[in-house]
Amino acid sequence: MRKKIVAGNWKMNKTQAEALALASEVVNMVNDEVRGNVGVVLCVPALYLPILQKFTNLAPNVALGAQNCHNLAAGAFTGEISAPMLASMDVPYVLVGHSERRQYFHETNAQLAQKIDMALANGIIPIFCCGESLQQRQANDHFDFVTNQITESTFHLSPQDFGKIVFAYEPIWAIGTGLTASSAQAQEMHAVLRQHIAAKYGEDTADNATILYGGSCNEKNAAELFACPDVDGGLIGGASLKSREFANIIKAMVA
Ligand code: 13P
Image 1 (tube, rainbow, N blue to C red):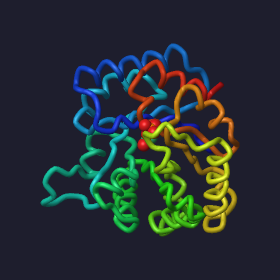
Image 2 (cartoon, rainbow, N blue to C red):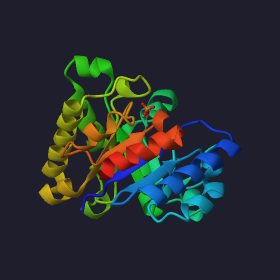
Image 3 (spheres, rainbow, N blue to C red):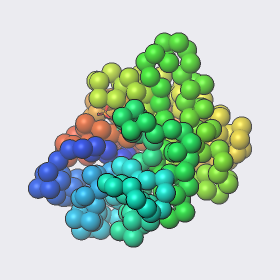
């Protein structure tokens, strides 16, 4: 069964007090207002994962995610966090391959394949991010570029492991810019990704894959994006930092 998920990516935002307030508000709103089958994932700064568990433990539909993990299990990598560490803190999700990690930390498809392996080996669900630049879209290279990201980072997996991954299509030109992909552009890419998955793993696996859209998704455009048949939810940046707006986006998924 395809899961519906709305995930918030807080990125490098919020002090401890702000993080506690935001998580508590989101959990209360979800518990009070959201009826229906949607999973909510809060991808918060790693430092706050343990202190936010007391809130997410109170909400069966809300889970925590890290924003990154290292591709190796342990070692001399100052400042890094490993998948076994996240697993030992009962963190169920991790973002892998966000475009900001690819751009600023030079993460490659091959390295991301290792991160996915490491997450899965530790029982953590990777939310694998992919997406093209404006230049690639203008050169009409976007389908090849994004399908290749998926091939190089995930097509080595067994069908069983592949079925555990969540995908997030985030066109780079739409992230933090206010320029959302139109619902037609999102649907078109999601359908292409699903066909690409079907060609490797078969129709059933493709049909069951959860593919989120991310990039300037907000409470005004969420309903239209989520109504697309191949869009199974969202990965929300800026709008996930405001509890009321984020809750409204979650409600748009189940409406
Ligand atoms: P914005 O929603 O701020 O555009 O960010 C999207 C994103 O990068 C989520 O991972």
